[in-house]
Length: 122
Image (cartoon, rainbow, N blue to C red; front, side, top):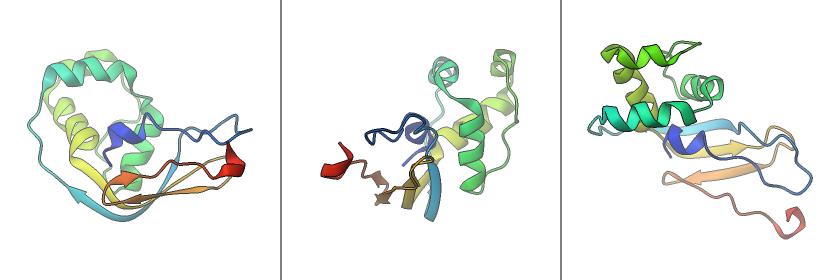
């Protein structure tokens, strides 16, 4: 699971009011090289919740991202390279995503998060 995916997921358990961001429990993290598309990065930048993104990257062992950002950084090739790497090349292969409110763990297996809810959680 890429951090792009993680940044868009939240816990939808009935009664949960603050299910974002999901905490990451990493079992296996892999890096997979992907061609960089700067137009995509510039377009997705405004849709990323930055602080949770930086924390997730740190959890997976990547600490090259700045704590605070503004759109002017999109003119920096160095920033775009680091943003691309964290967003698209670092994968949570095995582990879990944890609801910040309930502690419910959603397993991640072979890079796929299982966000299915139990019957009593719907």
